[in-house]
Image (cartoon, rainbow, N blue to C red):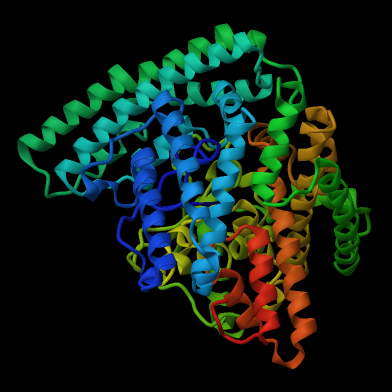
Length: 605
C-alpha cells in the first residue's frame, strides 16, 4: 500500500488534496492558449491553497515559509476553507474550454473535475461532518501517522530551522489530539458510535506509545540523529526543548486520549463492526466505496464480484497443491503453510536479504515490459512505530531528487505471520514494478502536471500494485511452485477483501464471520487475519479498490491486445497506464480507448 513523500494528514481526512504543494507552474502547461493558461493558473491556485491546508503534506512547505506549521483537519478553519475553495475552483474549471486543451491538459482537467466533485459531494451529503464526528482510525489515524512523520519518515531534520519548525508541528499535533476528543464527544452525543473493536485497537496503540521511554519514542528520534552541523548550545537547547514537548504536550495528549477512550467512549462504543450500524453509516459507506474504487459499483455488486473471484482463484490454488504433491485438502495445505517454520524468516535481516535477492532477479527482465525505470532506488526498512495493528506495511515515495529511495516500510513485529512464499508477490506489488514504478516515475516526470504526479486514486494505485503482481511470470518469477501458490494466496486475499469489506459494512456480518471466511480461503495466520479484518473495520471501502482496479487494468490490456493485434506492445500499454500519473478508473479507460482508436504506439495519450 503506497504512502507518499508528503505526509497525509490522515487518508480519511485529506479529501481536499487535489494537487501537490509545489507553486511552480508545470512544464506541461507552458503553452500560450487562453484555456491552457487558465487551467495552469487554476491548478497552481489550488496547489497553493492545499499547501496551506495540508502543510505536513507539502513537499515544499519547509521552503515556502508561509504555510502554517500544522492545520487541524477537524477545525472550522479547515472545514470552511476546504469547501469554499472546492466550490470556487469547480465553477472556475467549468468556465475553461476543455476542447482547447492539449491531450495531457485534458486528462488533468478530467482528474481535477473528478476530485472536486468528490469533495463537494462529501459536503453536500453532510458526510464530511459525519467523518469528523467519528474520528478514530487504527490504521491511518494521525496518532500513528504523525509519529512516523516526525521520526523522519517525511519530516526534514537538516537544519536548526527544521528542528524548530517540527517543534511547532508537535504543538499543533497536541492541540489536534485535544480537538479530536471534543469532536468524538459531540459524536457520542449525536449518536455516531464507532465499533468497540476499533476503539480497543486505538487504545492499545495509545498505551504502547505511553509505555515508551522518551528516548525510545519516535518523537525523540530526530534528536538521536541530529546532524553534526548543529553543535554546542543549540544542540543542548534542542534536546531540552524536545524533551519538554514530549513530557508536557505529546504524552499528556496521548494520556487524555487514553482516559477518554477507556472511561467515556469504550462503554458506549458500538458492538457491531460495520458502517451500517452507525448513524448515516450506510450513506457514508456508499461514498467511501465510490471514493476508493472510483466506480459506481454498489456493495452488492462488489460482494458478488468477490465471491466469483474467490471461486476462480481457489481452483488455481488447488492446481498448485496438486503440483507440489500435498496429499491433504486445501484447508490442510493452508495449515501446513501457517505452522511450518521453514516458511518464515527468523530475523528482519533475513527478510530484507530475501527482498533484495528477488529485486535482483526482476531488474534484468524489466526492459521486456517497460520503456522506462525510475532513477530513484528501492529499499525495504522496518516500520518505525506501533506496528501491531498496521498490517503488512506500506510504500512511501522518496523526495523528488532521483537519489532518495522509495521505501517499503515493512512490519517486522509479526515475522512469524509473513510467509516466505508471498515475498516475490510483495516485491512486485510494493516495489518493482508496482508502487515504486507507478509513483516514482510520475514524480520524476517534470512534464507532468503536479496534479497527476501526486494523485491518490486508490483503485489506480492499488489496482496497479495488484496488476504488477500478475507480471511475475513475465519477469522471471514464480518458478518455485510455492511462490506461485503465494501469488495465488495474495490474489485470494484481495478477492476475499471484496467479500468481507462489503459483508461487514453493508450485509451486517459479524467480525467473527469475516475472520472465518478469510481463514477458510487464505493461508494467513489467525493473528494476521484479525489485523486485516480490523483494518477493514477501521478504514471502510479502501480494501475493495485493489481488486476492482486490477481487474480494470487487466481488462483494458486484453482489450488493447485484441484490437491492436500485431501493433500491440505491452511496453506501450504500460506507458499508457502509468505514463500520466494517477487517474480515476473512468479517466484511465477513456485514455486507453483513445490510444487504441489512434493505433497504439508510444504516445502519452
